[in-house]
Image (cartoon, rainbow, N blue to C red; front, side, top):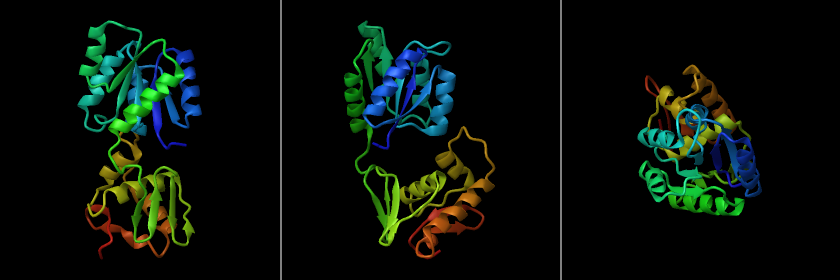
Length: 230
């Protein structure tokens, strides 16, 4: 798998299914939504790597959703490809002006869709984001979704993996429980802040005695990932 997740937003189930098959064949994970409300909840919760967004949606249009996503700090950097049956140039320009990264006019071939999607992801993925991260022999591989040490692979749950990935890409900074909930669980998930403590304990256990010291508790503030003494 590429490790990338694409959100398909289209009110026509056959089109979503066609796109889903194409994404599966290209080794992408995918999510589906049939309207803007459902899409926004998934975007906030799951933080997909790219959004395929239909221009015409029931209720809030795709263009309005794109405009809203680009205004919100948490979603502004997620690339958007507009899917549109509109061929007039001004409509295409409008889509790009609200922040869409590309547009594809229906009908389109699955091969064209995947090619355009890959091109947008290449343009919008910062250098090094997919590179393995190594700290004192602890290695996290974002592409393979694996964590390993010199002694071998470590086993941990998906939430602990996301926590570790966030910490290893944001080292030496203290994060409150609320900030970690927003960044790791997603702002659309309602769980108690103490849930963070439970998963921090699980992460430390998964890391073992050699690496659990990297996850530091900062009393009265939160947690940080650091190679320095607490």
